[in-house]
Length: 380
Ligand SMILES: *Cc1c(COP(=O)(O)O)cnc(C)c1O
Image (cartoon, rainbow, N blue to C red):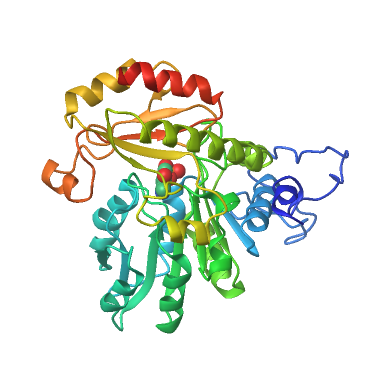
């Protein structure tokens, strides 16, 4: 199957055996009757497995070209499960501009359990090798990164990981499998905040892992069941429904992302636009190599770099909603310096490019003319 068919049929039973329902029912049940101890139809308790969640997990495996999908209560619960593969003394090499929640999970929870983290710039993948020791067990990356839209060469990183027998995990939330498929580029684990593009409608919080290797999937399934951060049946249904239009939504997110990036790039008040599809983006060539298009996440700074003007801009927006999160059908705007990155001191923020005027847009699937008009009036 091609990707645009997999989003709809991948891993799905063609007909529900009970009544022929086209969508899998929401099996809102915690347990399953047994005819004799152990005599069940494949499900015994919904932490261990639930048919609605299984339908979603099979879809996830299909769209990421993996063999096994695992659905979690949130993106962070999914990453939490990956970290539990490690032991005290093990080390992780990761990027220095991680999603804030991931950074918090690493440094405020797992550091206390004796896991060591190295956060480094990875736009030059060869940097990574200098930080790998005998104790390194995992490389954890995101591409594109948040909010600066840096691109990491996943294939180059996977070669380094394989050479040193280290696992590579890729947070594919921003790109989605529509744009890039990290398992095909050599990654061992793909992770999603399904809260974002996979769900796609800002109505559910969920996480996912996709794995090819049977033994690794078995370990992660064990952790999922033993630690219990599973996705519920209702949420599984919603994300499965979301995935069925992923390719349609992403196509429009990309078109609108380009239109918005081009508009901003030509606006006299705008200083820098960060969108990997722009030729002047520092990682444009790698983006072209590993992504089929460039997505709907766009960040930019203005020439007058101060918090007051940036706040006035986001308050004036009418079609874009000022909100955390991303990846839904509606356009959202965020001001990292006062929202997601407010806890980072201004000097630290500026080192990674998060200036006072930086605005991050999750460009939705509305009419692009309305989006551009909205940005124009707010910049004015
Ligand atoms: C939102 C997000 C997460 C965390 O996912 P939750 O579903 O909010 O727990 C992790 N990584 C990235 C890139 C995200 O955008």
